[in-house]
Length: 188
Image 1: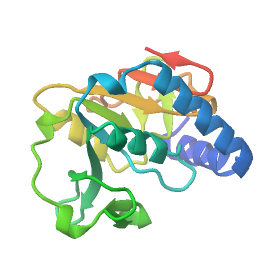
Image 2: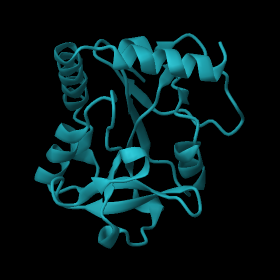
Image 3: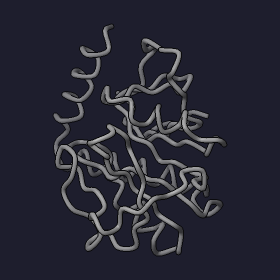
């Protein structure tokens, strides 16, 4: 299936989840992540800030901040069409609507960060394969980010079961994640 069609179909399925069902699935995914005891082993963690019907990452980010982890979140440098990171300390006061209305760090927090300090990434995606390849939203931000790193951090993707597909059109620049966690499975 063509990427654009598949992307639209899966996002539509995600958008159709009613609020109670979505909350239940998000909690199952969060519990599966926490049961892996992964977050405790890393200090510099980059986590996407959810928008729309994406899996809610705010409980994860809150956990990281409460456990004194260095939490980095993305923002888009529109001028250079790049995703950059900022360290944040407070979810309520450090974020504001940004690129496509996605919460991003406020401007005064946007300081140059050496991306190579990141040792764990919690990444979004639209679809994933059992081989852990991901299809994002088509901007290439995460693939470019992963390719720019000198060392590869652990990459974890959060997804609903229906986002796991048999195959995706894979490009040479596509970089798989290390673990995909859904409400019913952990793909390593």
